[in-house]
Image 1 (cartoon, rainbow, N blue to C red):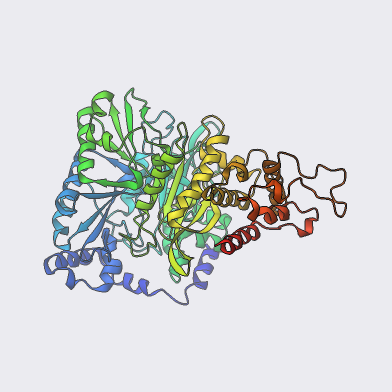
Image 2 (cartoon, helix red, strand yellow):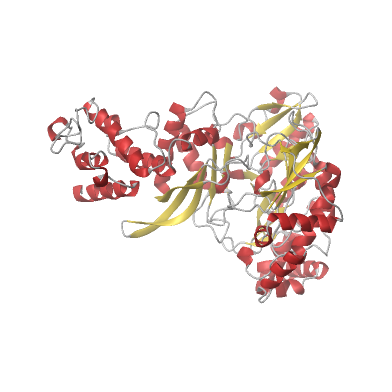
Length: 636
């Protein structure tokens, strides 16, 4: 482990001030302070405790709601019994204005809580086996598994026992409470489908097979903006807990404690290399491990809609909860269905829920739950993620949840679709709590200059995946005004609707599209078509991505689009002459007279797109965008 020691020493010259605070941390004494604050009121809480200590127990001070707290409740693997769901529903309604957020880590967040009520509501949760312990700051966060673990037709290894074994090591263990360098996310997937964002974790065990035996491949170092990497290690189910403990010990011992933005496991592994870290795991275990097997978690992830057949002959009913905005009353309705059907509740990473054990579908669907949250929703609502946003988070730039819902409602009305899977993931700031990088289209809140003022906006990303094959999404459009973003996305959705192959998901459509076009070309199409539609010019100046593929070189893609526009206007092919490059010959068959007066402002732009001299054509799409803006400004 020499390389790990050296890497740690190289980053140990300066410790972050948080580490000094952690040195004084004692879980028992810290909880006693929480009890004391509940007796003495909000004003008695120190700033250090607000910033760190209380978060160790899942309590977050929210400046947007003064003197009110958010409690993050650990829901292991997203599984809630009827008794637990009833308890959470009671707490939300009694102490938290009946508000609940479903989160991307299969958890529940309760809001609007008073510090005076914390001991009582905490007791209500602890009595049914739930807690807020270690759901914030430098702790092992909620462990993700397939929400249909042990039930789904494609579930090969049930991971509940592994989850409980791992959790038993750290949960409420003083040696592990806030003693890590930074937070640590864990996922275990024993299914063919990836329904738990398995490759986005610090520590991930993903279903694999080797020599005819089912087990897991180990992936390490995932975080927002970076997928975990294959550690080239095959782990049997009975080895999983020990392997986790080895990795956790190495991270705790050698992880960096200086720069809070660079202290995740990913950076320790980058410093020494995955091969060296793998050797350190084996040294910690005291024996060698076999190399990775064949990965089996290759199917598209996400939720299934409607009625889902389960192994035991019963069904599960899916309930779409757009952006995870839920309530205690809603949860009680879900619990009543589960109780009547002898089932349970499973939370998903896409902020939805599934009720299992259904044998009387007709009776279940009569519940107010499915009236409010349909089990066969619009594709735009079904897989919609949004983080807390500016209303509830001090880092949020945009509201987030209402923006996500507004866009999805607009798309449902403007570009209605069936038999489609669409994942729209929203983060209100660059911290990425809405896992925007994994969405088909991802949105990140930002500020945008418009008309001499600063307004709310989003950066739009494309091409994220949950399968681990395509990686994180990449920037598509930067600095789009928030209120206008839905119009740009509608243009893209029209392409998807018109060009998708049968039930092709948006994720796979984008992969197919990106094999032919650069993201610059796709983004430009959205800008151009949106602009033309705004000016009622879409009939002739609108183009699609069906027949004009490029080679990912912007100048060539611009030329192809220009040719399409010439043909759209003139109904003839550009360069329909013997030698289009002869000086003085027009390469296209339109002039000002042949153009409708509405199209004339774009004549010079289109001519420059198809200029016979390649050096005098546009080279990048931003040049066209700038010229369009100039044209608009001159016409005002």
